Image 1 (cartoon, helix red, strand yellow):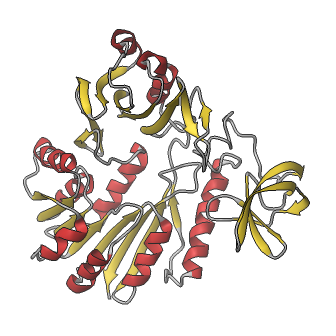
Image 2 (cartoon, rainbow, N blue to C red):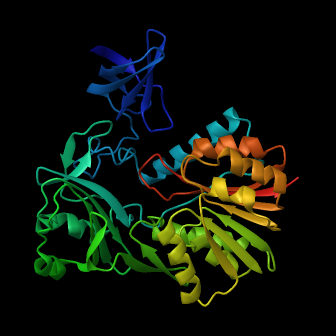
Image 3 (cartoon, rainbow, N blue to C red):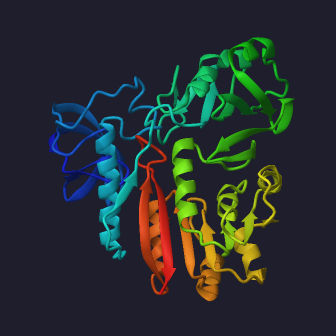
Length: 403
């Protein structure tokens, strides 16, 4: 144990930073200015990780978490802060990384706040171990049993409160919901025969479907969501944003920057949300997505919203775009956390569309890609969207214009 250690700063993951023997130490649940006793939990050549054993003094910015499982659960990182302080953390994080990586942006950084920083999530991935439900402690397979999640919508918490009706001993449980509080359950378990108490479960929640080991055993394997004036069908294995309010704010940004009569290529399109929003202004939209059900959803959603100027293509973006022979002036990107692969980057710097709208859920890969594109494009607008409140994660909106 090390005593009377000063925490000097926060890292990009919301961990406290200190130094021992000229080595940086990342300390969970510690804030700048706090003096603590700590125990090393991981020792590496260039850094170490630690946890607090005792606080000698605590930061004036620290608040008591409303969640009884914080910080053990590992799902939230910033519940020791007020909501405004979490926003300042994210703003400072972006500023520091932009400066460090020489990302040129001459405007003040803006953040779009979450209207409901708690109970906003419409999707949860949970574990059931020995008939107990919860989350794994961070960097472990140790279950933290829970009775509710402060970030989850009330309809998701209703499932947690009634999970015993699923009669599962060991399983992975994904719960998805919509703004109408309808519930889709996705269960993966070694238990081959379901023993769900459907009648009791349906009396507690608006159950629209259950997918059990990839087989639909009740209702549908999809749900509908209405956002921003559009109606979307979303299959159990298709991507859809977890925060409805911030998603509608993202739709507004898309609409602002799509020119009337433009031709749009929408990569990593999911069930077609951004492409469909863009289609209301564009002349033509081409969307590319790797998940088959998402492409089927996209085609269905276009018809559902009476849109006839969008075409969906099934395939891995990195593999399909070298074969595309399209003329387009606007590119929408919403890649997974790993960002753009080499084929996609080469495609962009060869085609050089006039406008790129880049949506990212990973700041580090976004900055890597912005640096790559900086020889050809200027970052004209950047906004932080607080899609994942009380966590270190953030969503980025970037508008790039050809130099």
